[in-house]
Length: 156
Image (cartoon, rainbow, N blue to C red; front, side, top):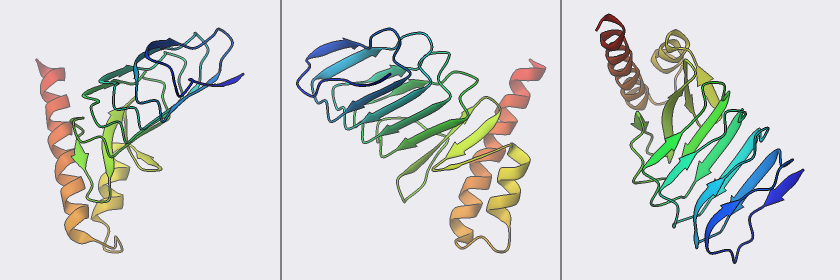
């Protein structure tokens, strides 16, 4: 079942059981959401009242776009497409000037429509063929710093 939160809804919204694709689109008065078990795809678009998003463990694809006040997004480890765009209060690993925000989920670096392991990401953004070397270096620096933090946590 595909389900959209009602645009006019105010406060907390709970998606019904059986919903596998959940969309919260242009819902300025929604403040929080509960997803049912089994929900695999989630879309948040322009929901300024939402400050924190916790996606269900079953979620494999999530898009959060133009949620101006979101400060926290909890992705499940099995999420294979985690995309965040234009959420100025959210602290991502790297904010691309084009609006993409890089996140680390399930051992992969996700940004826009791409997801890479650390080695793949560094190879992609440091390649001579990458069209914007300055931006590529910024991505590589963010990944290198994040990998160093992960190593520190593992040895602690």
